[in-house]
Image 1 (spheres, one colour):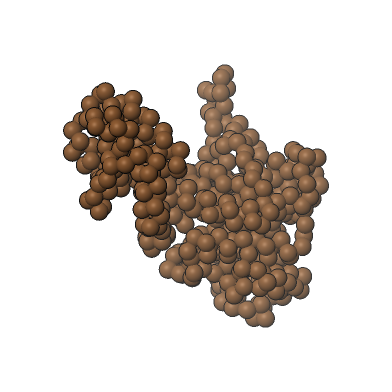
Image 2 (tube, one colour):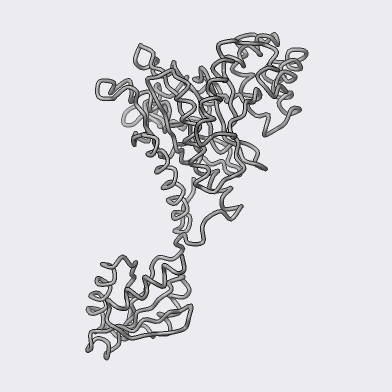
Length: 425
């Protein structure tokens, strides 16, 4: 759980803004849910591994001493969505398409791009079993990744029922399927040997583990040894439809994609970029999850982009635009003494009305000190109000980069600064 300084916040807002605009272009609507959910809402939805990572909130009042919990911080945005759909079904359209960009919490071990508090950027569609849903999700994710500047991404596609067939063919007991998939899901992080060791620790060893890992080498649907006609057809239809979207050429079948969460029932997806262990996001179909709250099935599918990992990779690759604001203001209004405070506030108000970001230096320090402050903060202009300027109703603007200055009417000065900023991009 981290603090975010101004530069960090600007970068986060830049990425969130792009993702939000892409989601809205696909007809998704915004939704927000509380940070805390009833503990029983979250437990049993993420598998054994997920249950261990839920941040529980101790009961309050007279029950506090028991050490029991009845609430928990949300682990993801998908289960709260399922709860909302069940609770407000009469008010929501069908299909219901929503996006949600909020923090989630997991008691995980921190690492590169992995934190205990982090934002997810979710997009989900509920009410249809059509493969158009998965294809549109792939298109939205592809558009978002491209808009952020990624060109080397791949959207991996698999199907949970294909994995079930492979697990059965390998001779793995159904009771171990979930645990085995948690291990297989780490192939891109710890490699074949690491997964083999973890499978053995989870009770999947010997010939079964060898056969399972050998099956994971299939690079095309036709190579999958344990066929599942319905799942295979579904994957093919998603691939064909996704080829008509912005995801054309980016969607690739990958049998090794597992995604360890228990609630997935059909197609599963992940977006990966070169030279990064792990994904920048993932999702899939979870047709049974809403039914756990509602008592009737509502088909659902979604995708979640991991904001924190995206920020890490974009920072390391230098992908943020040079035009992204890194200073708190475009112009600093400086005065010689306390008597200039009132006129400084008036000029600042005039400049702000033109769209400029304006900071008024609050203390009557030496002009040189005020200019050094502006330069150190990356503020490109200083508007100086001395006695002559106040009497004449003018302002002297100093361009710190060009080391030039000009005295003019505040409106003329504002136009000149806006023009200079536009040239800088």
